[in-house]
Structures are given as structure tokens and as C-alpha cells.
Image 1 (cartoon, rainbow, N blue to C red):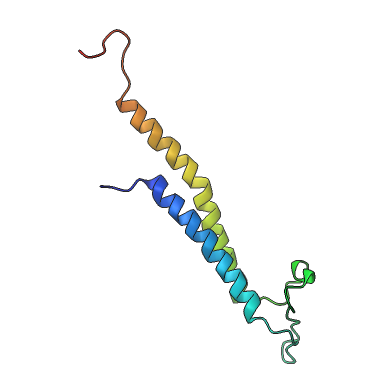
Image 2 (image 1 turned 90 degrees about the vertical axis):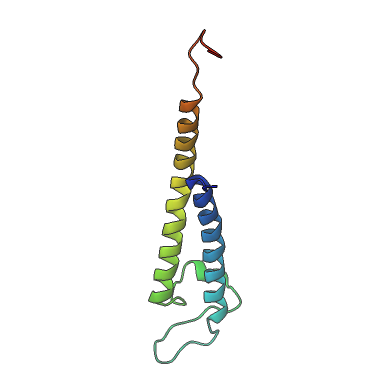
Length: 104
């Protein structure tokens, strides 16, 4: 049995949401509450509200990881309903009946 593209995309969306959430939590949990003397980064302490306006706690590698995860997830979110619509349209095309000719 072949899996439909919309089913695969739905799984990728759910997996992407979980993966990006886990990545964000791991980034925040690995952040140190003490500023690093070498880089001068101020790390978040206990998920403070200042995190949303100050991105000093995240490294460029971590930022790219989140950008890629979020981008792929958003791409799948957009492609999922389009694939489902195209599959339904293709299925309906094979079952179309002409008026007055049913069962012949």
C-alpha cells in the first residue's frame, strides 16, 4: 500500500513542530545564567521575559538550526493542504459519472 503525499507531509509537519520545540527547549536549558567573559554573551536565567527581545543567548549555529527546522516545517504546512486537494481532485476525476449513463 502506497502512502499518500498528504499523509507524509502531515507526519513531517507534526515531526517538525515537535523537533523545533525540543530544539528550543534544549537551547534554553543549555544556556548558562552567568555571562561568558570571553564572548560577553548574557545567557537567560529561568526563562526570563527579556529572552524574547534579547537574542544574545543563542549562538549562530543554534539560530541556523532553528531557521532550517522552522522553514522546513512551514514549507510542509503550506504543501500539505495543496497535496491533499490535488489527491482529492485526482480521486474525484476517476469516479465522475455522466448524467444518464450510470451502470452502463
